[in-house]
Length: 343
Image (tube, one colour):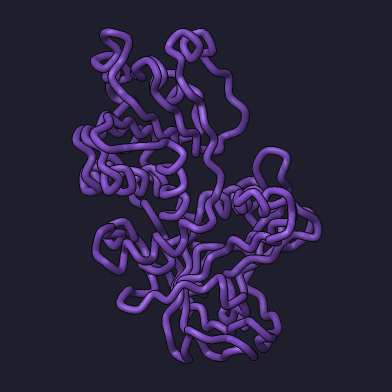
């Protein structure tokens, strides 16, 4: 089978690897679609992010969906030919955090395409994947591309859970890449009233409007636009910071009302924080990292037509054009989510 392997920064190769049969409790899946994530781009462009660096060749990818081709012993509830979205989250189920229900913080997490541990956890950008049946969410009625969007949507559903009750709240989203766009969709589905989105790209801001943002602000053209929301100590109840950029976080905090909640999703490295404002406004600062049980909810919401991700799959490339796909995936002048068609 063909796989997409990163060796070092800017060294992406399509390589042949052996496919395997499913064991007990496992399924074999012919991958149909895979989305390129921000972490994939960090490996492609920089060889890693922060202290996480490539130490050996690694198959990339963790946003995938495909059709079941074989069932291992003891597998029920899935059928040959069925489309499934595959969760890359594989916690051990036995460590202290799994026992607390914090599966996304598992001490022994096996998350596809991650260089955090060594040996690295090989990813899912391959033509044939063997996965635990428990990872597979039936995605009947969806396209493979939609099903592959379950992973980033799950990230945003988890972030929405971190933010707490959303009904009637005013929300600011900074950064309108895939995660920012999906946070707009998730926040609105959870009951947010006013949603304002900021970015530096006219294209992504147009996509934010399509996702349902009430107002979009181009901070490159008018960096003072958020000041209209700073009167009387601020406007927003919730900030989803999706850019990982310190200026975006600082500007967002200025527009937060006292008692608001900041949910940090963007991973741009360590940032300096305006601690005086956070303290004086009594703001809550929460991280949001991956997801677990939200994955099946993401698939269900798409199946019911409650969240539509199709407009935000902006490009689909053939497997043999993987390098071109990675080149364009981070171009926010024309891309929200670039996917690869494996079939």
